[in-house]
Image 1 (tube, helix red, strand yellow):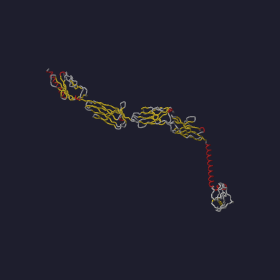
Image 2 (cartoon, rainbow, N blue to C red):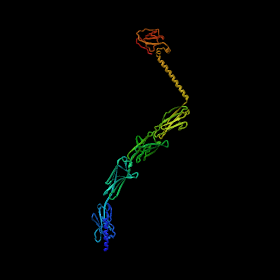
Image 3 (spheres, rainbow, N blue to C red):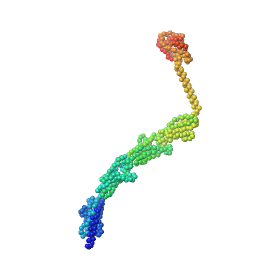
Image 4 (cartoon, one colour):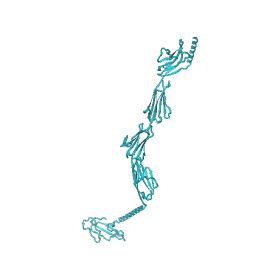
Length: 523
């Protein structure tokens, strides 16, 4: 017995030495959970020792199997078991032991218990953003976006915003130790989209919690939709094509028929269809199309942007010179243009038997849209006739008739001779007219054309006179209008000296008109 007591005493002394040399241990427990504070293991039978625990220097609980506690209890090996940790459970704990013979208490363990809670209630917010059905958020390109994160943690926490971009590269955007953390992105761009995570870590327990949110950046195409067409099953069927590239996500495209400026969702001509795609094709039979109708493609983007393109259907109408003349042996070019059709028509040259003319040694066909030419080499009489500039699109055909007249070179010479004779006759007429006009004074007094070449000249002087002497020596031409000439003096100038003396004077008074009124008969 004495030897056993000595050994036990030595062991207690050795444990006391270890306890004094030992660095204080720290234990962190989560609020609401169970935790155990370990006392030092005993090398002897634990039943020979009695344990108790102190908290902050005061005895908290003593080992007593007969009085168990629901919150605090000491196990058989001396450990302190705490059920449902509370904030008040935190503090400085000491484990002491003694032998059952009421020896002094010896300190075995010195433990600092810290109670932590959280992080809990981690939440994040992104504004302004729109929630999709799958839980993803999206914002519009170019907008200012604000991010906020918060959580609850005891005694404190660290918050961090992390971004995982599309390339799966992660980087921190912001961090802090407050109860919330926020940052913003000005003029957000597609490169900013990715998965945004807010992580909260308890500074005491190092427990972490996070919340993730995928954020997309939407933007509509900057340009307008493009409307185009392709002819399929030529020439009656057409493929209307609408494309709108450059947006995210892809837009929704609709084909509509426009009648009287109203959009018909499901028109009888173009079956309206809607699809989320960057390119929408509609196959339409030409029999149900009509010239003058307008077809429109409307593009809708989830960001609220709406743009459209359209074109008006139009039947072809070729234009050109309907009458062409060529000489035998020459080359002649027939031409026409077609610019009005929509969709653009196919244009060919045809002969009267509806035979399409292709390029050969006789014909050269030029297709330089919208100009179409047919050159006939070494024209002969057999080439005369009707040629057709034939245009057709899904709305129907239209042709221009061009009549070619072929003439020989002899016929051309005859025409030139006829023109020369006509000009010659016209010049003779002009010469005679000028000559007659210059001699008009002699024609008026009845000398006639026989005296036009006489070297003598006549001067006709008309004067008033009160004398009514009648001269019978000279006869005047009969009066034509019934009015008498009061006095007529005719002076004839000899060709030799052109003197001023008159050969004779003739005076005639009309006896039927006694009034002395003076009248002069004009030529």
